[in-house]
Amino acid sequence: MTDITKQLAEALDEAIDLIDMLDGKDNSCDERYNIDDLRRILAAYRAHRVGWQPIETAPKDGTTVLAWNFEFGSKETRNITYTPGSPGFEAGLKDRWWEWLEPKNGWALKWKPTHWMPLPAPPYNESNE
Image 1 (cartoon, rainbow, N blue to C red):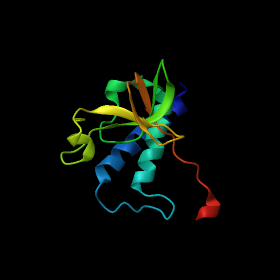
Image 2: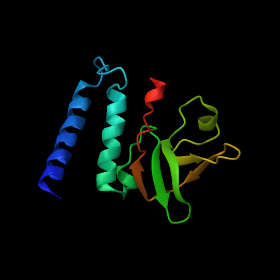
Image 3: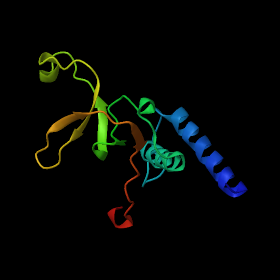
Image 4: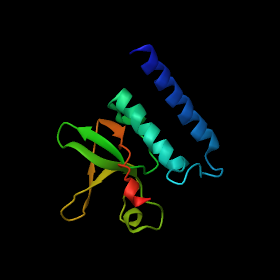
């Protein structure tokens, strides 16, 4: 890693920390982006730099991530649990699990990924301003 690349990486890490500190306050910093957009962009950069991470380090708050295992390859997925009173909870689904939506029928399927990384930021299209 060159000195400039290292400095850029450190600056981006500091930006992520600053965004985390500002979370909950006025999230408007530009007409095109808000704090949540910037957090997603910077997290995607950090993930690209780090690469695949062990699934144990993935967010457990329902955030959609890109996950992978040997059987199914990579899938957009999220870690969820049903809340008391929901149909899933009443059906006995009370543990946390990883789910991905089967695209053809929209079925939610359980699976056990081994690695994850944040989804990349969506492309920015200036014509959508």
